[in-house]
Length: 196
Image (cartoon, rainbow, N blue to C red; front, side, top):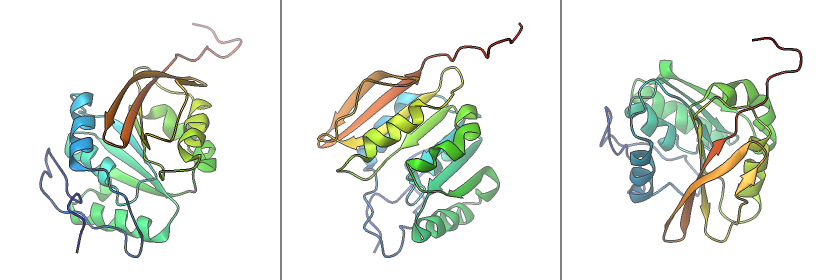
C-alpha cells in the first residue's frame, strides 16, 4: 500500500498517484509541507529544477506539474532510481527530465554545470547526522544563476548555518519537526581577465 502522501498536489498532474521506492523506508515530504513550499515559489513556468536525494521524485514531479520546463533527479539507490523513472513514464514526463545515479553529497561536484543552469534546487537529505550540513556546504561551492532558490528540508535537530559559500539564508519555516530553509545565492565575481 502506498503512503498517503505519494501523490502530486497541484498543477497539470494534481491528484495523480506516485509509486514509492520498493524495499526502502522512505520519508516522503508531507502534503502540507510540499504545498506550502511550492506555493511560496509562485509562477514556475519554464524553470529548470534539480531534485537532490530525490527518492520517488515527488518534489521534482511537483515542479513539472506546476509548469517547470525540465527537472534533474539525483539519487544513488537503485530502487529510488527505478521508481523515479517509472513515475516519469507513467505521467508522460520522461522527455522533460533526466535521472542521475550519483551519490550525495560528494557527487555535487559532478553536477556543477547543471546546478548553474537551475532556477530551483531541492534538497531533502536523510534526517539525522550531518547530511543536511554536508549537502549545503557542497552546494555552497557551486556557481548559480541570478534569482536561484535553494530549498533545504531538514529535521529541526539538524542544524545548518545561515551562510555556506555562495549561499545565504533567505527565510525559514517550521512544520512540526520539519524545517524548510530557503537560501539565495550571492552573484559570483566575473572571471579574471573577462571583458564586458
